[in-house]
Amino acid sequence: ALSGKISETSSQVSASYGTDNRMTSEEALLKSGFSKRDLQKLKNNIENYGGSFDSVTHDLANRFKAMKWITIIAFIILALTLLLASRDTSLTLALTLLIVLPFIWYITPAKLGYKSWRYRKMLTNSETGR
Image (cartoon, rainbow, N blue to C red; front, side, top):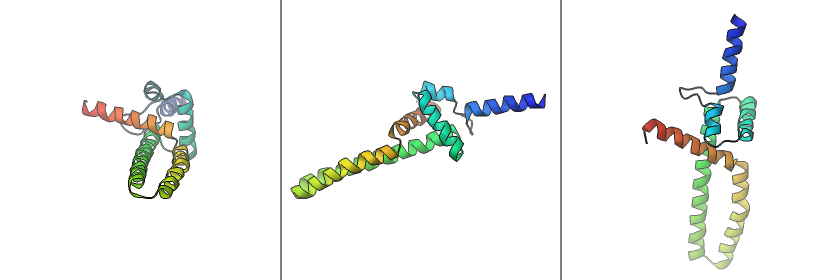
């Protein structure tokens, strides 16, 4: 009887990977737009580094927000440079951004970050009754 309870509990834990009251589940993530391939990437991360679906989606959402603001600030600086600096300086900055920003977005996992941000936003909105 004890081994049945342990296996039942472990299957519940492996299905949810959650730690708080919301218990983010695979089903909830699939419904919010994550693909099975995305879920596998999240599971691999959890197996390699520990944590839960909640913690991984929270971290990815934070990375997405940081990258969003870095990109916005970079384009504001580019716009100011275009207005105030020489043509050579503006061209150098534009080319640098064309190289650096895609690289940064690639190492951030932008797609998973966006989906996590959207999921966390949905959770926040449902908790506050919006």
